[in-house]
Image (tube, rainbow, N blue to C red; front, side):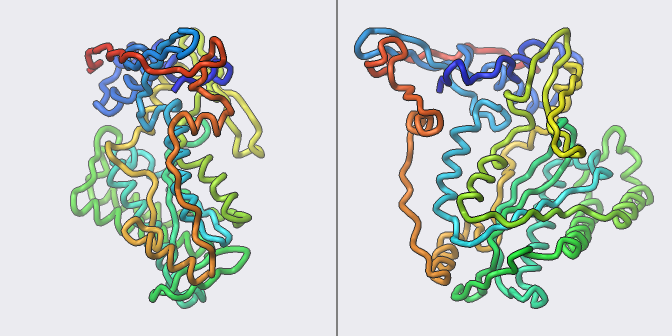
Length: 396
């Protein structure tokens, strides 16, 4: 897909990797996953990625269209993926309010998480999901049913530092265990956040301790002291003393606002191209929102090595699913469960899904028909021949 020139940022992540990536790779020993991400972003929508030639059916004008890398860490490749995902979620929305909870890990855990991403993130999802499901069926919550929610992992803050947290979008009620009744929650909040925080903390620490004793954690570099039981127990003691952050935003005003929210959060990468302001003399400048000062817009300049390092710490383990569904929204049961919710709520069935092509999505999002000839503005662009990828040796 070739976006109009006017919508493209002047400086992109691919420009940073092209200018400074080779130097960074020479200085640092990188895992294959990081090398793959850098390479994919560098060649995305260039002749190195291959593609095809399109020719106008009327005037004969032709131009090359290069392939996207489709890497989930690439800021240029998430728009269509996000829109397809949102289309599928639209059919699952219920005519109820939705809540938004954020579960954040203490920064004391950051070094351990960075060296044990798959294990630590798995524990995070398990602790959060069990906490919310437990509150949904707890008689004290006056709901006594099965909650449903979508959890989205984010690993960064606005300055690209490590900040591990789960965003959870939760319908305001529960489905009874027999699937016949919908019980709505309170209007102002779903569950009390202080109670959520304590249960979340207890579950995470329990599963972390279990992973330690099962030797599922690794302790390289600066973590070399943690394998010793006394050091690990000292970390756990500090975690128990700390108040863990569970943040609850006010409920969304209806399903359409939920979709708008999900569109902003689900397929984000650590930094978008529009936030990168430029690079000069091995320094990269980007903008960010200062969360500690009413979200004021500020700029930051980092050396190329530090900028790349910060970006790469957010590369996810291979095949790791960062968007997961739980409770009555779990993939294994949500078709029947959502149908039961709709019956209990006396809600109309959703409109049927219609699959859209890339061209249809671009037209919908930008108002631009990319099948129309940019030369004569009349003919249709037709694929005439393939362009092969330019083979490159791995940087490793």
